[in-house]
Picture (cartoon, rainbow, N blue to C red):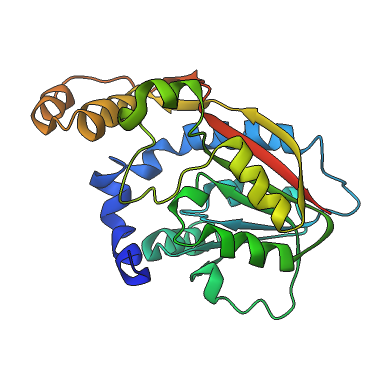
Length: 247
C-alpha cells in the first residue's frame, strides 16, 4: 500500500459509515479509555520534567483535548484531513495533517509520545520509532497500545481474530516483538500489561454484525431498534499497553 492509498483510506468515510458508524458519537467512551491510560502513565511521569506531549494518530483530537491542561504543550499529527480539521477548529488544538516521517521537527523534542491504537496502521513502524527516538531525550516516555498477536485470544481465533483487519491493520506485534523494536531504538519497557476498553453497545453491535459478520442487512434491521447508548468495559486480554522510557 502506498502513502496515497493510505490517505484515501482514512477519509471522512472511514470515521462515519466505514470503520466507525460515527466516530465522534463514541467520544464519551474514548475519553473514559484515555483516562484509564493516563492514570497508569501518571505513575511514571516526572511532573518537573515531562511537559511537551506529541500524539501520533491524533484523529479528532479527543485525547489531546482531555490532557491539554496537564502538559505545557500538546501536539497532534494525523494523515486524516477531516479529523485534523476538527481537532483544530472545534478543540483549537495544534494538530498537523502530515505523515510523521515527512515532518521537519526542526530540532524539536518531546517528553511524552503516544500512539494509541496507531502503530498497527503505519506503513513503516520501525522508521517511526527510530524518528521518535531522535525526537526524545533521556527519560522521555513512549506509550503504545496495540493488539498482541501472541495472546490467547489471538491464537484461538487465528485468522478470525478481530485485529486481523486489512487493509487498515498493516502490522501485528507481540509483547516480545514490540519490546525488541523499542529496545533497538534506545527505549526500555517499564510497563507492559493488557488493557480493556469502554465501548457503547451500538459500537459493539456495529463491529460484530457489520465488520465481522459482514451482515449489512441484519445491521440495518437492528438499526431500527432502540439500541442503548451506554456501554460497558471489556478486557479480552489481547490488547497490550506498553510504556517505554528513553535510555
